[in-house]
Image 1: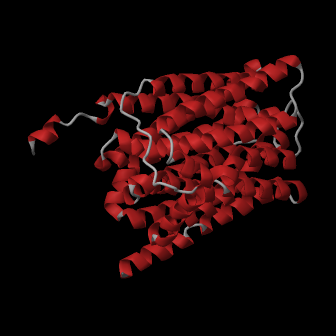
Image 2: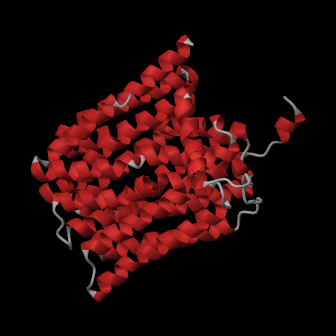
Image 3: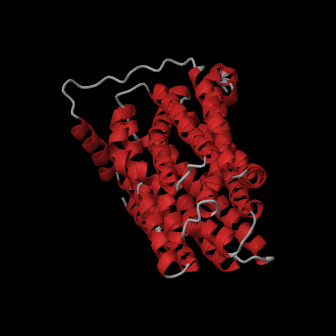
Length: 411
């Protein structure tokens, strides 16, 4: 073992990464509350129908569909940490408007839709900038470790977030619970502003046009067989997953009449499962190889989520549903984390923002379409039919990945 290896500091001894990690953890804790509180505002005080609830989820991801591609090109032109700070401050202001409107007695569904859309735009810029900025804070051989640390902390705080959010909603009403998330984004912005690593403005080629830069990112993903398959699998999984997820609270809070606290338990189970899964990523990839580990991840998680659907009832079966949902996320984390690390490893630094944006545009841009489809199925067929449709589709998402991994071995 070399002296350089012995003297190498642990990941959390790196101050800049630690500030990024703490800031992200704090904001994710608030977001876990919002994930429950925002739809409960629509379903409860505002009396949203299944279609209207699905439309709210559509707005929560619409920014990735409308601005995902240009956001990546813009991020590659700007100082990435400044983009993240601006995104945090804007999200804090948007969320703060909801308890204010509720206090004044003027809160409406259109405002809720507008805030949800604004949050999705800010999150699109923040997440692209964050994933592109991380390689500036840690060495390449630590990217998997750093991504695991970020994902593990997100799932830890998310584990208590929905349950605490349910209790908070019951105590102070859903609109006021959203103020907690607003404060969390302010704390995140403060911590990011204290990162000391230089954040230079990326160099631009003279005369570079936005359209050409977007096309360069799209072309890089399209030409790389593995990146293309990862993007397709994530796109199908996210679209189908949102078909069911958009109707889950409609089923739990609306049709089954569960309390906010009980509604939050399924999200807590998912977060705990995700945390456990994040700890197993490195072991799974080492034992099976990255390709086979990701395939197993998608197949096992899809099977477990499919098995959970018939257990969503207002009795003891609900505990089984929560357990299966949580185990599904345990399995899925290998695909989720390995995908991010592979993109960061395979993409040249000047293209990273646009490649991340291409992935987000397709994988996350499919989610508003899935939510809209879920709302339509829930409105005109049944809420449970939306859950079944989404679960079956998620299981089929593995097909592009299987084809790509098999061809890679043959080559």
